Length: 471
Image (cartoon, rainbow, N blue to C red; front, side, top):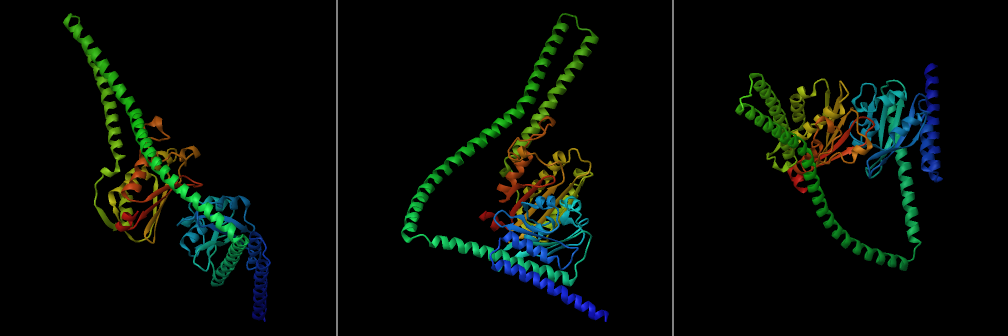
């Protein structure tokens, strides 16, 4: 009897879920606004489990960012924090799911590495488990993510997995219907124009485009020359500014030494030189010499760092090596440099062909920058390096949990001689040199990405030498 009652309850639940899906499809057929349809989908989905909290995020494929479109019972501050998050491996459940195009099951947010940078946000919203399913269209393009949250750690059943997959498929139907309808409306508007109007517009556009291309070529050539001039002026000006102080102090010290030697010589020639006076003058000369030495050493250090700006001077064979082993060697070599700070590495297994020494210098400079600047007031900081291989390119996500950057600092972060620690003998060349290594020696790209915690960089590199030559 109990089994019959249980089967009846399951049948009633399945019937209610099916009614909810029909309701959503009816809204689609009636051309309701997409956000209203998605909210209805979330509400009807929670019939399946009242303890579940649903969320649907839309993916902006141009900028690779996620944007909340519907949710039920999730705090407003949590949804607002997800606005514009860049997808990537290890970026929460939804960010990872949209990036990998695969389902991501995080049973416990407290311990899972994907939630390191968003854990505090999730826990403040009283969320402890998150299962995310990518919403994929018929052409294989990711349209967004469908997520199921729980307020306690939770392992999904086979029935849970089937439900989240069916819900994501229904969301894909909604997204694609909306997109197709928009395209049809736009096409209909275009067809309302007469053939003559179109021909006139095309002629006007072609003439304007031809003129714009010519002007753009002219401006492009001028911009390249201007950029070269500004870069050269910036380097020369920055170098002159940095080197003028120690050189000036050294010249002053030499002048003071000359005066003391002249005074010592006069006292000796006039027979007025006492043992005490001689000792005093010698001690003062030693101090002056020491000042001169320290400033010359500083000047020499600046010259050596300035040489590093010319990354093309580094001659190293292009090698094929395991990225996993390379990062392991890097972590071992930097053990003393890291001190109490932690370096966490996640890397897929693959080989890369590139200038190994340049890649080493890139990681060293970034880690050194995190320790010196990001962890300046932190006893134990953490650096996360996540490396994935996608088609012909390597994507490196570098993230620390340091003090981060002010908005005005992000603009000039890769400029030579730019530093936020001018009074602490920082030269401001580390990130500029790193930028040159990535762009010129490794034929890749590096960019600073907005992050709610610390500093985050994304580095894209070609996997093979042939791809590097194309870049």
